Length: 231
Length: 402
Ligand SMILES: Nc1ncnc2c1ncn2[C@@H]1O[C@H](COP(=O)(O)OP(=O)(O)OP(=O)(O)O)[C@@H](O)[C@H]1O
Ligand SMILES: [Mg+2]
Image (cartoon, rainbow over all chains, first blue to last red; front, side):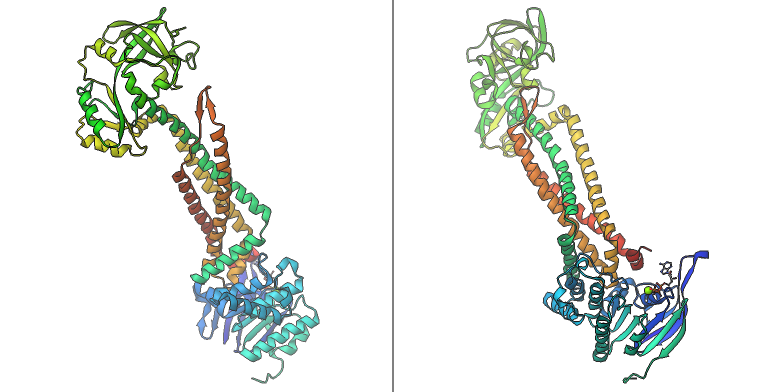
């Protein structure tokens, strides 16, 4: 259960201040799939980063399962990012010196899994996004869409409680997009994962429970698209 | 912690394996030069001082020297001392010597010199004096009116132009000697000794009995008792044995003596050596730090990403410690190859000073190990410090630079 109250994020100071988020309030139930939409520059990435504890809000309250996470010390935030949260970056953010498998593998290793288990977990995740045969390639040897899928594999490999995805299908064709969205759906149904994803594509809506639309840092609409079987 | 080590090692391994090989080669090359710089000059200077101390043993002091105590000019019971010393376990040979200040004159040319009275037969086991006669012969037991002159006192010999000399002295020339007490003697030059060392080549040797006669001594005095031992390295032990065997006069090892002499004669070189070691170390440390720092800055984005996906700062910092340790180990390895190549070269082709002094660099393994450890410690600090600084930065700043 995510609760956000009057969340604000300003960049810069004085006359140059950009109000990327100007007071947003919402709740996300466990197991919900939420799409965040809005024009470019409306604050979607900013919001997602704060929710994933990659950034701090300027103002406002943010709790997960009743825990006020914005005030946690860095070491606990780090642990939380590792164990609870998966994040798919808009610009992939892969480690260039690691192969596709190693990019995924390093997280399982960090969690304390054995080398063998970690490797299997990584290959399994890569298989889900259709990249098993390219696991040994480094990012430079992959296309944009393939890199995006490695980034997705990294985020889903550990089956996080909450998955944040920033335009995960931006560089994918329809077939691959569908494959990724099916994976999300499956994770949600199997493990009850909460998924928050930023998207531009109207047709993605068929995979989500709810759409939050941002404009200039505020929520202009928050709609349940259809009745989900579990709710 | 164990996870941190595993992950740190994986990150370091990947960045070595897939990182730019040219950069790696360059870093290793620079580090190898830093290492070489740390160890090479001290080895040459070690060779220089090794040569000096070798001279100390071979000529004035032997392995252990016993000198008059307090204000005494002489060891008054030298024969007694000799008897005790020769009985000490580990002593190979011992002799007594008498030094006197004198001026030597040859065809209106006069030089001041130290004349040492020796027992010629005994010196064969003690010093190299008998073996460095480049013209004529060494003194014999009956050489009472004969003298050996140091090469720097003879025109035409190596180094003779540096100080006053006696002109064209040859084997058989006659020289007049005036001792410090005014007694004059005339000697026939029996030989000229050349040790390429001022303490030898500016001096002269006569028979022990001569000095005794001149100064009216009664047969048991000496200005020095020179001792050689069986096994190099046991000087201190043997010295202690000599003292506990009942010798009252102060005893010194060649090292005790060389230290004093080196402190004087090589003060400036020593200072240069210390300075250069210090500067090399500081420069080396700074370079290692800069190299690793640039490396870390280049990979700032990766550090941000790693942090963002939940890799602990501990593993990130460790990965840089591993990385820079790897660089430095490679650098040391290449540096050692360069070092030993240079050493082999200079052992075979020693540096020459004047014409005849050869300086061979000395390999001091303890010193090498010290420097290897120093570099490794520096590398860990140099790896940890910048990585720790960057890993403290906010994720957004590290990844996206703002
Ligand atoms: N570090 C920053 N410094 C200053 N302004 C920033 C910074 N990051 C984002 N902004 C501004 O904040 C606003 C929201 O940015 P954000 O990246 O959240 O938009 P977005 O909705 O994700 O856009 P897009 O769809 O293009 O990814 C934009 O006006 C952007 O220019
Ligand atoms: Mg965005």
